[in-house]
Length: 172
Ligand code: PRP
Figure 1: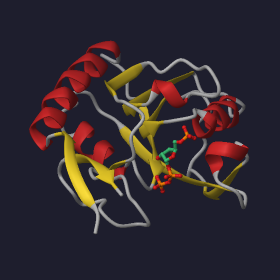
Figure 2: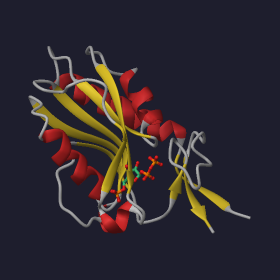
Figure 3: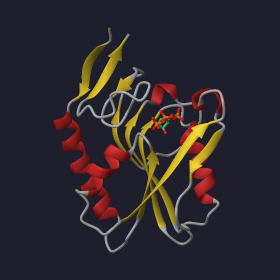
Figure 4: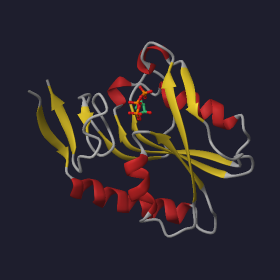
């Protein structure tokens, strides 16, 4: 039987997303950025975030997975579902739920940069800096969290728990 402990309540998350949205709306005033959600984890965060933005946005999704061994150790990433449209000349914002080792994001930044966007920045709700293997710049970060296994608010354990409204620590 697993135990869950709330790390960030739905209210805390909502409050922080409103602040992030305000900042992003200010920074992208007069622009129409393309938000690229990284499936699957980021879909909950992305859908809440866009409803607090007061600038026009476009949305697209990309789904990635590791080859064989897990992404966190190999860093070799495979695109399961690519973007629908070209991002050339666009103001692109990658939207992640969590940056852990940074290997997924490192790959995505490389990959998307090569498609010649006008700009490319990163938004993440959660950051686990203790686990980082590659250094990178996260432009907008919701919360820095300790190195614990977290579920809920889009994040899963064996595909379960994504629908929890709080972000919880899963205790074995
Ligand atoms: C998670 C998360 C990031 C990645 C971060 O996705 O959404 O994409 O891992 O890890 P990293 O910084 O160590 O590369 P996951 O592989 O769990 O897939 P999911 O979003 O479909 O659950």
